[in-house]
Length: 386
Ligand SMILES: O=C(O)CCC(=O)C(=O)O
Image (cartoon, rainbow, N blue to C red; front, side, top):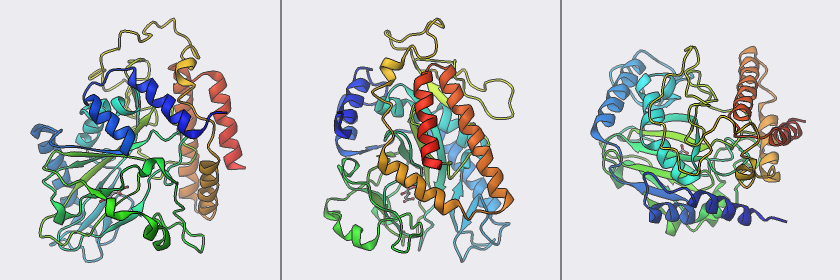
């Protein structure tokens, strides 16, 4: 029987066979070993200027608000004159430059270096950590928020401005991605989204590595890596743009907590299957991008003759058997959501199921998933739901 570690090693061996496009071999070995990376000054000034301008627009828009809504999460003392934004949810839906960045910047290529050539976008958010009091983020792992069929999801944090130690940079625990999955529920069974104080006290936090960096630096952490960030008591804010990607065959067990209206669940950038699963904005009738297809590796199957299922021997090692821990997590989350009685939430759930069905079908038609794998996935989903 394959153990989880053997599966992870097989996955990494598989990815190693595709030469990296952006990272050095040392960098990707370091990510696989430690569960994080910091790429200083990765993002060119041109992108930073576009992202900063978009971010200024978000702050301007927030001035008109007196309470948080589904997009803008405000600190309690937010006012029109002195805005204090905590977070913009799914910024890719709020400004085209955030989506352009998620789609066309180097990030997806870096993701491909780490999780294999077929990469999908999952969600984004813009965390501000405003000057003088921007709040601490407690220790947590990400995968419990959005359980998937494997552990390839990874978060990229782009610093739009310089971020020193005083601004509350991300802090990660090296190697924790290979350690236990922690319970992010409070003792009374409610979702806390963070380790209990008891579990956090057991972490070897002396080993924490903080990831400050100049503007344009990008931190990357695996979805199992334990991480946190301290409060920002400095006079400078810390806008951090977070984009989550995953291997295209990592499929969600649960609804996306930050579903994006603007980009469909089929927003997949596949270097081996270039253009068969095009990037598409919902509502637009044609693919918006033929740009930045990654060079097709010499051994890659490019012929349309490669029909559904023909790549399953490549994909099988990546496609794990449903993980009992994650199924349990999915059940917890389903129970947590069962009291979402209002019609709005019901519609969102239905929309999400539809999007997922579309995503699975597009993976099937792009030959990223065999019919057998699709069946296994549906069975796993049904088990998680019932
Ligand atoms: O904004 C931060 O400092 C932390 C963000 C984070 O931990 C997360 O999004 O998972």
